[in-house]
Length: 289
Image (tube, rainbow, N blue to C red; front, side, top):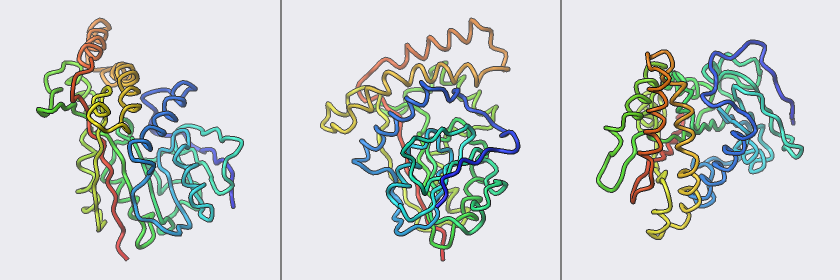
């Protein structure tokens, strides 16, 4: 089985909103652990058995790729990302990383990523980078074998509390959404994924959602599995949004002081309050036989 790292022969068309440096890798790896924690040990929900080829799209640090490689040692597992993935010393031999643009999967120069070859395609949290969701899902359908599964895990952008959406009037949120739209991002991708899958020809499409809580309130209500994620998001999300916000609104006429005011608004509105959360959606479907 292959364990090579494939480097791109052409530059990717898109870039990260957050530079993939050591601190960002640490954040992503911890986030992976906490997502698995709220899912009570699960990483994926698709009912796959005995796969021979798996693709992890936008694999980041490779945390899910490693997990899939260890869980299915007889499968060839490919992780594809815009950035170079530096493999761990104990990388499973059946894992291969490919540096390429996930908007152009069918144009990948990795010969094993070809139509009709995959048993499972997985992606998670591409919301800040994916600009071609319906096309991407159609491409995944083409890459899959009959009866293969696609799974997409994404956050839904608005913030909620027990009364409903609370972020509609937040100035930074309005600017964030406008900037995302201008750059071709769809912050509603999580709730649209099921319809996009059905339109692409997937069947047995299912959805499941989890809380993406700000603070410990879910744990205080008896769901202890959310405590660590809530604390993590309370600490990390404001800083993350501040960084992404400045990228999204660039070129939209905001002065430096106006951008700083929006970043301060992030901190003010994301003070912990009972019930405050986003939703985390898991959507998966099968390519028919």
